[in-house]
Every structure is written in structure tokens, then in C-alpha cells.
Length: 340
Image 1: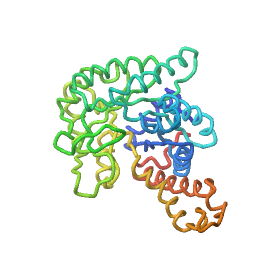
Image 2: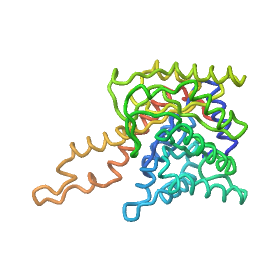
Image 3: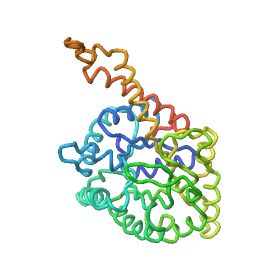
């Protein structure tokens, strides 16, 4: 069962929560990066999450006639076939989707999965993210209610981001300031609007100083202990212990201590994009520099086919990214936890 069924995905998340580990959620933009993620999970003996952002989906759809849904569906269908060769289980997820892209991305994908479920099949994706962090919390949660109902009908889990993550990703950007911290009041309003499971399962991307992209230590103040306060504040009001399944966004550059604290407080999924992009690209750059004369037609020569063949440097890129995925599994304690 390489691609998780809805039931297995729920089991994966429950196991992570109980075991205080999290699944790396790896952004992919091509068949090569998909294989790199799958390889990394397999080598770490960890299940995981493969995710596609709006920008990644548009890229996958081809540059001649850009279309996010085409790109996402194509890679998901491809993943359903090739993942069978890997001895792990993965869930397919779509990353950050702001309000102005819902009609061109998440809503059509929900409809596709709903049609599949109506035919007795499993959904194409196992979860989708609604990023309403640029909206007022009231509007964010209103749209979240609508999407959660559609997700439940398609046997899909919804991820919601209720407060901003700093930095920029696929056109959604927020300043790095004091607004990057979710309050207990924000969490209670989320529980009031979306429930605590009775209206459908969702993952919560709460903010504790997170920033997308690359940053040096000291430039960002992460407070993962804040997640404990959010859990406790909602638990006190509703009487449900550790009510949220949290997602850690903007994890590049985080310390081992920050990650450990986040795991102890309910994080079950952590996004990786910047670090894996670098890990994929760095071996290619190294190859090009080392084989400059071979990859270019220098001074009228013809170059060396074996060095500019995309398979040559593509294999190096896949291996480099796979190593970074295994490192993420170790940091998130998911190594060796795959479903038997």
C-alpha cells in the first residue's frame, strides 16, 4: 500500500502523535524530486508525505500551457504507479493555497477526489492545505468550514494555517514581526469554527515565529513551547487533551532543540522545501563546474555527451536530495517507524 488510503493516513498521523515524532513533508516539482523523496523515506525506513505547492503544480503542468490542476494530477497519478516500488507508505498533499488560487487548485482537486470516492475509489490526494493567513481570522475560518465539509465528503484531511508564517513562498509573503505567534484566543476560535474532529479531521499550522526560506541563527525567534500553551488553552475549554495535530512550517535552519520541543507539543508534520531544493541543486552545480568543458561546446568542440546527459547529473541530484530527506527523518524521529 505505497499510497496511503484515508484510513491508513489517519493511522499514520495517530502513530506520530502518540509516538511524538513527525513526518517530513517534502515539496516536489518533478519526477526526479519525487523519486528523491521516496528514496530518502525508503532508506530511512520511514513513511512520509509528498506535497506539491501551487507554484510546483504550475511548473509540473508545463510552461507551454501552465495549469496547476494538470500538474498536480499528473504527478499524483505518476506517484501512484512508481511508489509501488518503494517499501514505505506515503501520503500525497497539496501545500499553501491562498484564497485567490482556491478555484484554480484546491477546489477542483477536491472535486476530482469526490468523484473518485463516489465510484468506490480512494481520493487522489490524502490532504490539501488552505492558507488563509493573509485573510482576517473570521474569513479564514469561514472558508475553512466550507473546505472542511468538502474534504470530509472526499475522505480527505484539510490543513489550515490560521496565522502568518513569515517570509515568502509561492507569492504569499508576510513580514517577520510579532504577528508570527498564534494566540490561545486564535486557537479557541479555530476550535469553535472547525470543531475538534467531530466536523472532520484537520491539521493546524499554528505560528510560533516560523519563517519560510533560509535564515541565519538569531534572525528568527522560534517559540515552539507556545504550542503547549495552545493545546492547554483549548483543552481547558473543551476537555479534550492535546486537541490539535500541528504542522511545523518554515523549518529550514531550526535547531534540534526547537524541533524536539515542537514534537513534544503535538507536531506531526514538518514541511521541507528550501533545504531539499539546495540538496538537489548542489550536486548538479558541482558536476557542471567540474565538467565545464564537457557540458559546453567550448571553442568549437562538441562537448562530452556522457557529462551533459541529464541522466548523469540527474542521478547525482536525486542522491543528494535523498540524503537530506533521511536526515530530516532522523531529526523528526520518524526513522524506522514505517508501517509494517
